[in-house]
Image (cartoon, rainbow, N blue to C red; front, top):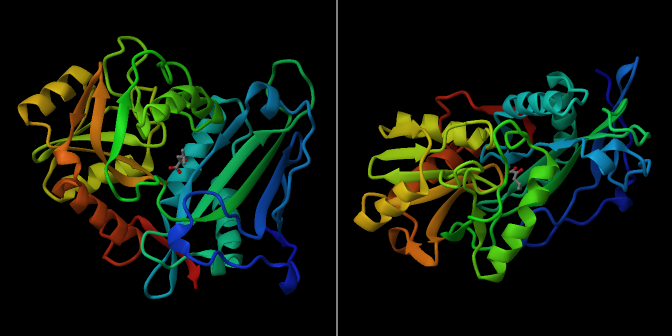
Length: 359
Ligand code: COI
């Protein structure tokens, strides 16, 4: 694949953010973006890296009216030995492919996905922050850009990748967050698109999240749509409940995102000698575990969130504190192991990390 690169003159490049630990999440963007178009009869054409700029898009584009939009999230890490590392990027490529098929979109071939990201990140390597807990977040996005208002799949697609240097996703940093167990709104139902990384799922979550935040909680824990009983996910992360040496996470029943960090935590936990179960877990079981002390910790997992400790659950007018609202030892151990592998500080017995260049 021949990717065209349109370089900017040195004096047009943006200055780097002064203090990477204050970056927050997704507020600063780099100089370049990757783009490629799918056109009917031609396939994927015009792969290009050029200046990051506003898109020109037809106001009738299918993405804008009927939400043919999917995205991914992964990170580039600066290894201590100067390697630029990605974490399981082929898993993101495959999940985006599956998302595209579910939404009747032209899937992005794995090679295009990986090559576009590799070349863009290498060109933008000065933007990979080196402070602890920071990384370069990569946001591949696919949108339907055809221009007719009948409800049908687009006949043109734009695949683009943008980059943003980031620190912690939550303003709390690596500190326990508070969750509001949502009983009124639902995020997704089995048979719908809850397991697809599409913007609509996130739009559907905004009102409940805003109401929870107004009440002082960080995020919402969603329950299943049918019985309003089983824990699902948090929207920005999958959930894990810790019962001593056993981890329980909701099974992939079709309504939650198949998280890559989730899958990695399961493997990592088992390799460290924990039992790890994927099964439906009722909120009644969670609350009972908190009341009798058998549920010892809870945390979320995600690319942006990494592993985020959960310090309390608010359910039916009662606040239930988890592990004294402190980071528990299991959460800490899994976090340390995972980030040491991601940043290339520890051996990677799983073969998860990909070196894509040097700083
Ligand atoms: C990610 O973790 O990469 C996500 O896409 C979640 C998003 C809400 C930030």
